Amino acid sequence: MNAPAAHDHTTTQHEVVKRLQQDTRFVVATHENPDGDALGSLVAMHALLKSLGKEVEMFMAARDLPLPDEYSFFELEDLIHTVPEDIGERTIVFLDCGNIDRSPSLVLSGGAFLVNIDHHHDNTRFGTLNHVVADASCTAELVWEIYNELALPFSPEIADALYVALVTDTGRFMYESTGPRAHLMAAALIEAGVEVETIYRRLYEGLPLAKLTLLAVALSEVQRFDSGRLTLSVLSAGDFAKAHADQSYSEGVVDHLRAVAGTKVAALIRELTDPDRRGERKVSLRAIDDDVDVSQIARGQGGGGHRRAAGFSTALSVEELITFLRGEIAAQLSDSTPLP
Ligand SMILES: [Mn+2]
Image 1 (tube, rainbow, N blue to C red):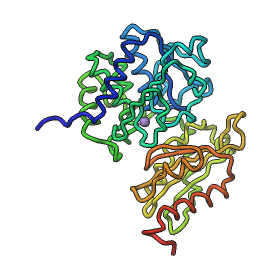
Image 2: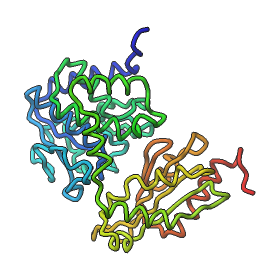
Image 3: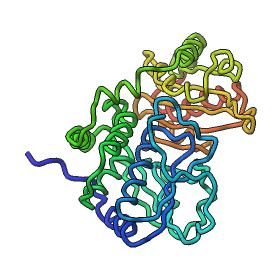
Image 4: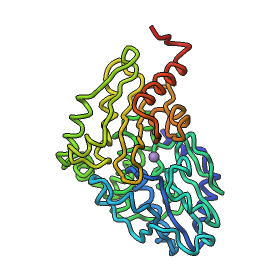
């Protein structure tokens, strides 16, 4: 049996490769609150450009640092927090960014050329060149394929970065997005030296006690609506303070909510604690199947994401949010599942 073909996106991939080869100065950037895929893709693309002999800097907002503990091993080289003076002459490579508004690097849109490499189906195609592959398991899969096209070797550190992106974005190879390419990529990376168990420990063990405390609070405040089809929890700024928890410690909480029987949509509402974002809340949404498209709900509030995993920020109160979410779910399910 032949190996499954690469995605049918070879044209844009060639165009990306041409750009990377021909241009000389770059900035690489990703979305705010970067996750494993964002960071792994960023680090791997930075290294790729370096190995092509390019001048490249990595843009990340100061407020996204320090990175969450599980990602603290990522080495962020050539890191900048402000827009370089010569931005108008640089090519910007955006990674894993569905929507330019989700990126604090919005200001970077003054670049000479924007390359947009992503796998969000609702990507707004804000780039000059858009390499958007909705059925890729992660953005890092696309970066890995670019390495392959260029026949560039990568260091064990880059293999680790790509593997972390792959494992986290596929829910450890369990989400719907996990295709044959994801497993081929994993095999190649393990052959390149990834130590699977080391990565497992970095990502999922050695967690700060405060993270467990915060999870306990979230689980003790679970609420269910409409016969349980909406399962949600709320974390206030006070909950974070009491648990001595960073905002990033809430990562993964929503997956516990999704797992409850009868749930169609799980939501975690958390109040932001940054002084400059007081009163704002972040909402993480998960759907258990295709009956509800949570990215559509998120877009209604200026956010976005995948059909089964999406999010948005809002100034709405908790009560308003719950009303909004129940209404959106009811609207999407109106044909098949009328409210009792
Ligand atoms: Mn991703």
